[in-house]
View 1 (cartoon, rainbow, N blue to C red):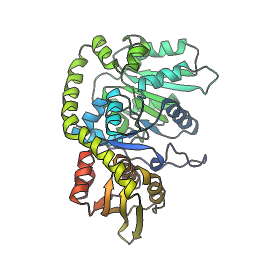
View 2 (cartoon, rainbow, N blue to C red):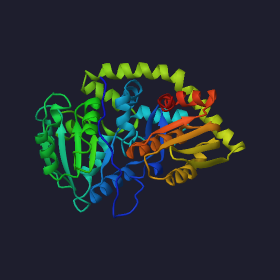
View 3 (tube, rainbow, N blue to C red):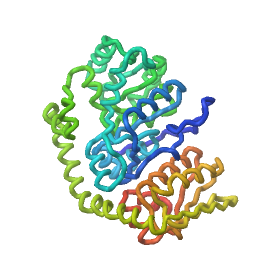
View 4 (cartoon, rainbow, N blue to C red):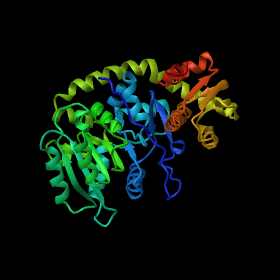
Length: 389
């Protein structure tokens, strides 16, 4: 199933001033097998949700698990929904394990189901959030709404829709979007299946006025009580996926297919990346410098990177990228003198690509050596170079 993303993500402004959660270039984001994964914990994610709800600013959260990573590798449209999200926490324990093996500072699982449970468990004296539920099996969203509203907390469900099993267009009719917007909800939770849910959220991005949006899948079932969630002890062991198979037998096929692909990637991508990341850290100790030169002409903003484009230099590079003029000119990254690049810097380039798309500009690359191209492809970011020709 391929996803076509038609949404245009507008540059957001606010009288509240700059906020790091909407400044993509300030995100601590890493390229994990081609997907952007944020090194973020649950308290920070909850603060982001509250901030978005308060200031009415779009916050698309993509809760990346192993299935998300596998889909993004085979489906560019699905990958685009992750790249255009405001936050991509590591939802699946497999994503955390991959990050640890590679040597990335993504230390804990930040699951979408835990996010909803955390908000639901907060005392009513906290900032109140209005929730809208969209999707799930027939009757489940209604049952979840009833359960949420029966408990005194900071979370209130103000609406729910069971859209049936049509396509994205069928679920995007004016009356559907109108009902969601008229609810004046703060948080829209979709549960349509990962690919359809991500596609629906992206397709309707400009039409939705609910600030916080996320596809949280089985969270609606957990809230309704139609499916039992794994006990906390099992979650802490990283075995919730086994519990899910026990509770929902049909999931074995998805986990089996994703697991097989992961074994292949372990040999061809993850172990080589683990070696490469450690080599990059040693390399940057010997040659830590990165120089950035910006030259503008009437056609493009050319940015030349000289030295090691690694985690150590990401913050400095982020500040320099922020200084680029907000025009629709092509941003051309010259890598001819770049000796090393790592997952953190590739994550930064993914965010620069997103910023370019916001203003209808294009990000291109020139001068990449054979070794650098191999590093891009090993990290799953070869599509950036392929697109640039």
